Amino acid sequence: MTRLMHRSLLTKPPVAVVARGVEIFDADGRAYIDASGGAAVSCLGHGHPAVLEALHKQLDRIAYAHTGFFTTEAAERLGERLIHDAPDGLEHVYLVSGGSEAVEAALKMARQYFVEIGQPQRRHVVARRQSYHGNTLGALAAGGNEWRREQFRPLLIETHHIDPCYAYRFQQEGESDEGYAARAAGALEEKLLELGPETVMAFVAETVVGATAGAVPPVADYFRRIREICDRYGVLLILDEVMCGMGRTGTLHACEQENISPDLMTIAKGLGGGFQPIGAVLVSGVIYDAIRQGTGFFQHGHTYMGHPMAAAAGLAVQEAIHQEGLLENVRNMGALLEQRLRARFGNHHHVGDIRGRGLFYGIELVAERATKKPFVREKKVNSVIKREAMARGLMVYPMGGTIDGANGDHVLLAPPFIVSEGDIEQIVVRLGDAL
Ligand code: PMP
Image (cartoon, rainbow, N blue to C red):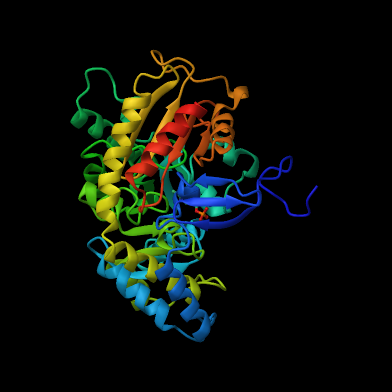
């Protein structure tokens, strides 16, 4: 027994003692390839020298200053950097300590914006079924996974869910991509009309769906249509790029590949690369100006927001990605990963689908390939594969309930941006053994 509460109260995980590059070593000296980047976090791998140096320097200078009293050079510089590279129209940064905090802040900012501009009746949120936006109560309310939400009802925010854009599951036979994009995005318009569009404040979605579905990219044109519908009805578009953002899909922001900009965007995980807990909301100039000219104060705040150590880590991670040309490596190694996965598992009896972008891939595990029939839930196949992979020195991110909250199994691959061809080979070989 241990005094520390682990995720499972029944088992204790191995003790990680040191990590370098793409590997984590446990107390027994066993090495694990971090093929999931934790949960798509460790984009630079472990122990990156430039980040360690930046953190040591920051620790020497100042480790903490409350944002009610001070700003810091580290936080200001990170803000400049993030806006320099931000999608069009996003002009300000609100720093927090993680993904759920970022989602909470974005939802509250959307709400305050509408109060400030005299539309307080806009309080509904529309999101997508089977989505995940975090585990705090507000973010949980936005998420669309009934199994996670059920026992915590009544939830804090009135959220209404539409089907996600999963071409592999919902595109009908003979339906063109354009037709499917129009139908999937059209579900948002139908929902707005049903609720009364003037009562809705925001639509929230992941640009590329991460853990809950296993790296599912949108069909072309879906988000252009979503943007158009949001604009038509004055609804804010919040893109949650906590998992798929910050280079993971081969461009700094996943929405660049959809040629759209949101009004608010949440980022976290790869922002600090695991060196420090950090998240952020990127905020449009319009929202910022309205709140500035209104009360001049966003009614929110956390003790550790804008933490100088976290900001220094975020800045060093982003500079290293830029200086080492790592987005190019994401695209090149991502293409190799896809090719190797398809070659090895394309005809595997228990692989229903392989999809993703950049270094962000999902593998759907099914009982029967031809019909894509899922395994029975009790088998917990995703957990079994995780365990078998760990036994072979490989970390893959397991998810269950990925079809309807109850059934469906996936594993997610999200290796560090520094992976080599040899690492990719090892990942595919060990995953093959585990399967
Ligand atoms: N949004 C998305 C899309 C996520 O994947 C996650 C974490 N898996 C979160 C929000 C919540 O982030 P955190 O765990 O840092 O609170």
